[in-house]
Image (tube, rainbow, N blue to C red; front, side, top):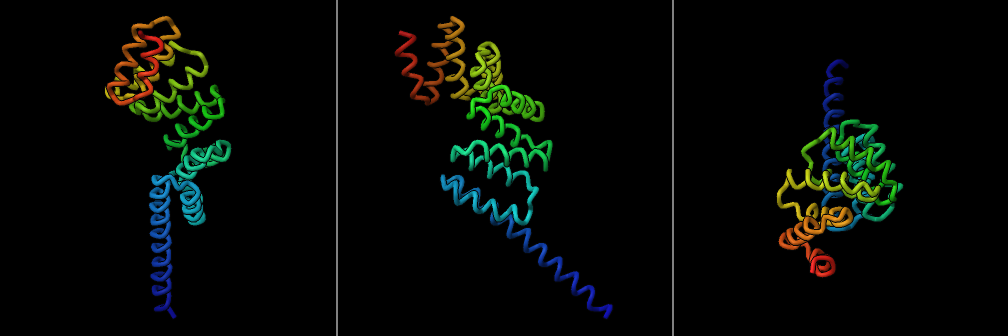
Length: 202
């Protein structure tokens, strides 16, 4: 009888390893489907991962982002909140939840999430750009400019940050700065910036 026990343990470990591999495969499959824009299919894969590992913060976050892309913002926020409960230092969950709250125009709640995300990772240019969007929504134009500027300091070719900074500059009467930003954004490939140049900078 004692010789059977190690065999049982080996089989248990083998099943456990297989399950982990299966979860990893499903996770990667979900990511591929997400990148292809197949959000519903990605969510189904993430659901299967979470049956095996219900507190896997990256999967909860990725499923939330897929739901956000489907414009199911409240369901997305639920997933991000679960991810944060599973791993309170998982930066992407805060930043993603902030964006979903922004999409719901819940700007003050979004600001808190971006503040926390930036506290955890102060070198994320995209986080500053997105917090700038929130501050613009709150009509904190100077705060928005500061965030876009920080994003540009971290990534000098961040086209969206130049494009976004133009609006609060213009609203504060800084037309020359706005036009400079829109010009730079156009040079970096944002075609929409040309419309602002034509309308406000002629």
